[in-house]
Image (cartoon, rainbow, N blue to C red):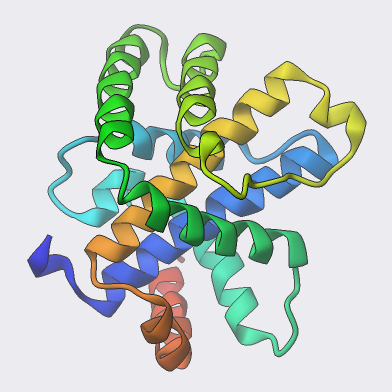
Length: 209
């Protein structure tokens, strides 16, 4: 992805992370979240060979929530959603460890191919497909220490349907984190170009309106 090492694509990948973690927080605290956003985030796991990073989300519209959330976060002096920020930071940390686990990567890739076939029959929002994606997270990222703990209302966190969506979305967040690195993103660049990333997000949002 050498040709995609631009601030634009880094910003899009960061919005992908923000969208996944925002939806996770919504599910954990309210028991529901934007279905179109969930579908776009989960679909990103099953698009193996995109022409460019935007295609992973089915176009800019697919990560509108992430663009809005990240732009809002970068426009405020204080962190507006502490849990979302914590989840995002944890995903970046976990993805770095995952990047060194070649056997685990191979296992995830093979299982995602099975999920891809399943999705072609049922659609990505089918409970069996989501359960499969959640299981892939359970067998891979969830085994890396320290485990990412989700805070929310117990009534929602005890629902297998909601937990499966949360785990599948966390896997999608890892996918976006990998994309961010592939596009040349790193923590130092994020801190150095915070203002430029915010401006890029504003421009991308204007393209949607």
